[in-house]
Image (tube, rainbow, N blue to C red; front, side, top):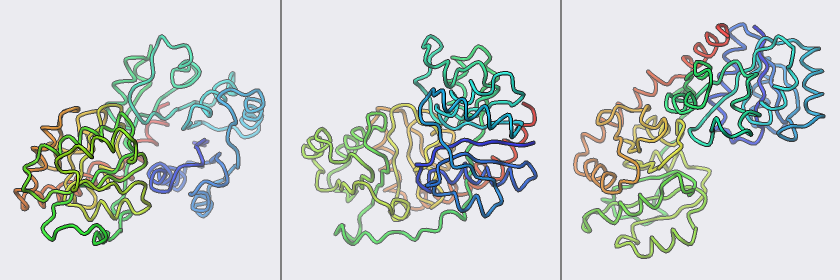
Length: 358
């Protein structure tokens, strides 16, 4: 089974690694893989070392006559069984280029929302009738998409698996923050966008008892937004909220925390920040939105709370703060769950099985 993969070149290493290793696993398992992406892709050399044929090419626009012509010529000269398409430009151009050709097209979908059967533009991308399948990163994404599909069976869940060996960061030294020795550190790694719910977490911090030394680290872009700064300044625990902004050592900072919170309010796929927390045995609190809740068993390998509920977040933080033994046990259970249920080897085999069915 020959497989063409078209993926974006601008993703950072930690983001692209799960899918990149699936590509390598497919190739090493006997199904020849060719990857089209920009030469600046951070995984380019690793793919070359794995013996994968690389094509330095990315579509310029969502629909381009030149890109369609290029893809059609390439597909005719290099017949493949499956084209696995990771962005809208790849889907749209390849779907038109493949008309009349025997190649099967599979798209990737990584989050819920923003796809509607009544929106004509969606039929150029994820609802394109030429697609034979849509690989969804979680059951929540699959179920959300199936509501918009005339053939719901096209959408299937294939988790982006991980490998514990990828996560070898030592806990970061937090001494630069001058925290009290008995500080209980809560981490939140997320770019401050409306759907990430950072203000909900800030509100939750203000609900904690004033005498507890719980400190919050806000890690990610947008933490200097005026609205957030104003909210923090009015918080009764403003001095316990630390805005670190974008950090290249986010995994190490996560490993140094006592727990993490992802307070997202909508449209999560399978959040990497929660997975990293679980792998580093740091108990995670996440909201029941998108695929987040699928990562853990509530109360055993993490806590799941309703979105938009700062009181529930504050309650779970205090449970972990008050019971260190439970927190340690939950952290260990989280790491085991990622290994047992979200391993990259499982993702490789499920992808291969589904492609063969298609």
